[in-house]
Length: 156
Image (cartoon, rainbow, N blue to C red):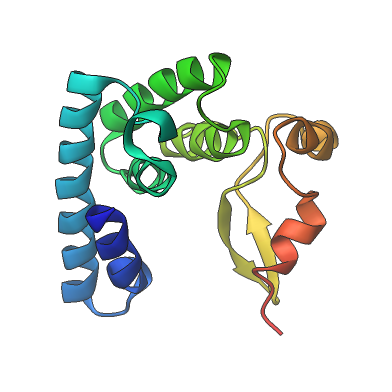
């Protein structure tokens, strides 16, 4: 939970114009990714049953932000998939982590959860594998329709 709180506090630095803030973000997420990797090695995926709801959500956040540690994201994805199959983790969070990992691997995402940027005030997602099925797949994963999701990111 401490790592998630630190992540929230420092996340603005991820896209800062200040290189020192970007570097601090990268160092923080790498340190957190290393610690999550240790936790996964020892306990498997930190489910809500194991660590509590808030800490489980924090573990997912740390995995999401381990962008420069694909080994950590891949391990988290594998363990979280197993937890979802066993009913002890959420499909929605798994879908976000799957998309994030795919994008970080240079591949097309499935659910359209990862936004590449904003053009003319409209969010632009990273390319999707099956854009025509995206909302159907999102619904299966418990994610709102794409248009509702990107409306959160729109710049007026």
